[in-house]
Length: 185
Image 1: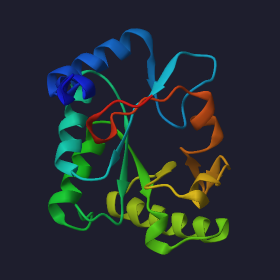
Image 2: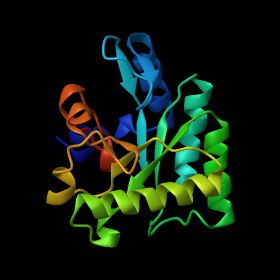
Image 3: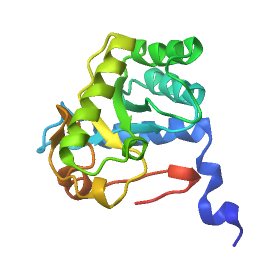
Image 4: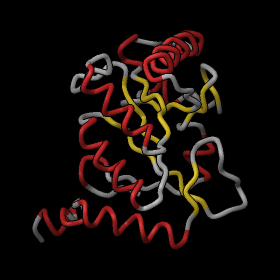
């Protein structure tokens, strides 16, 4: 078996991405972290934008064409893009104009956070910065590169934001990821 067969590289094309969205729409209603209801068949489609805002916009356009809304979790501290750079700001603005939700992709390592109090403080700070840059309200966050501390943060909310890593989202909802170009369930 080759790596291409093992990791299903052919799944990771824009054509197949559109196909996956269409399959998901047949069975599920697309929701976000604040508008789902437990008793309905729903899917929360999200993207952790770690590397490329350009690629994120391409996916956002495909989703908009397919009538799908998703959440794009963006980093304030990224080694690969800068939210204060005009081009990147414009790309995020386009994603918002396509009808998508912006969430905070939070890097606790940047601050070396050790307590929930510090977590609340820094989440509020980053939330306010992003809200001011884009004139939007953010209602959810997810951790970037988890550690023992962040995995122990089990409250549904921190810093006034819904925690995408709370036990409900981690244990009660089926999870599928294509992180790093291979499937995880």
